[in-house]
Amino acid sequence: MKLTVLTFAYLAFFGISLWAVPAAPFLITFAQPDGSTFQAHLRGDEHFNWIESKKKKIIVKNKTSGFFEFALLKLDIDSNFELVPSGIPVIKLGESNLRSVLNIPKISRRQLVKIRQRKIAEKRSIKILPAEKSNEK
Image (cartoon, rainbow, N blue to C red; front, side, top):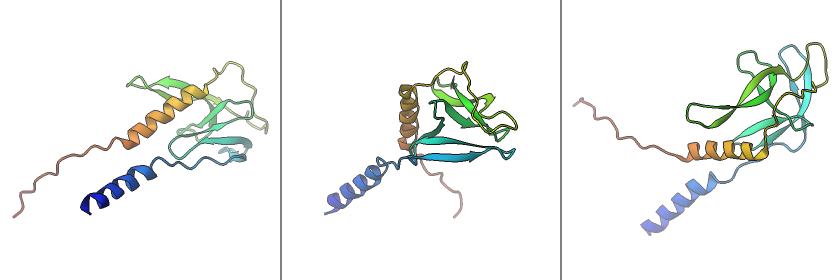
């Protein structure tokens, strides 16, 4: 009985984390800090998501400026790829159409899948640390 309950609890805990809710399958309007807007698709799921233009360019939000910019791939200190802002805003100031940028390298689905798999693996790696003993009596 005890083994059955533990097995069920184990499957429920790890099985639920396998299900991921996909992003909205339609165009979404995003607003820039200057009030300009653009439409793009939100892709991915709750584990890893990104914004994709109609021309399949990946877009990320620059945390410093708050503007949406085209994305580049960058290796982090562990030799893993990360999406980072390129410094090129998706919209020129005062315009409403997305820029047509030719010199931004294309980010493949395969690269995005690898980033997603790594993010999921990081979430699943649970590190159990021993509790510290208190000196209180």
